[in-house]
Image (cartoon, rainbow, N blue to C red; front, side, top):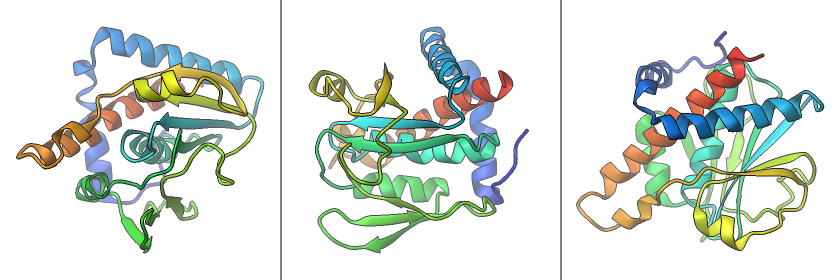
Length: 213
């Protein structure tokens, strides 16, 4: 059922998070089940599914959604499920979030330094090509223009982005912004917890999809 990632640190993280699924609220499980059904319904008519995680700045939560779902698709052997992220505007992949992902075991390497720095993600043992991560809008050439399922991970994006070209459906799955803890004593912990929160739910979503196929 599972294969493709050889990092012991990541495999242990995934295993630990799987034991925490009972802590997901009933309401949230219902939302994740609805999302899994939406994905499977579209997969019945399309061999490839592109999930686009959308937030206002493509800086924190949407980047987490892309990284986690990319890893989950490999972990649960779902080669037809592809993850992307975008914002309603372009800023930068926040350094605090990059650091939190690195602390969790994701091998992110900076490949370009600028106001909108780029990072490379290569999951050990996956055999997949390196993934370039940077802040982008939905009009970026790297985003597929057809067959998108848009997952709205912040309420601002849901309100301010009424139309996403190429999206065949959109689904609200909001998360609180760890930015609220920036420059406070709780900053590092807030980002670490957000990595685990979104990872917990993306793993559960991947499991729902895998067990139904």
